[in-house]
Image (tube, rainbow, N blue to C red; front, side, top):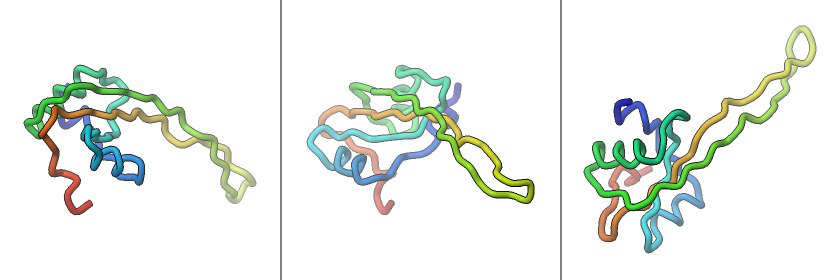
Length: 100
């Protein structure tokens, strides 16, 4: 799997911003559901040229959603996705989050 296929997008939220600005420099990404920790850390190194010391991965199941259409209620779900929290080596940071 190529590095640009592994990391889909960065996640910008209040909680991820606090982790990124903290002492340990943790960055949060939405990643491909088939990617493992080692592929994610290798992709971060290839794209940004920084060393990742740890990677925590979480799978999120899609939530049920309902909407009203012409035929009544339509039942569906949101997409399932995978989140990765990557910890960088001391003194390194990623500049992709500048201005986000």
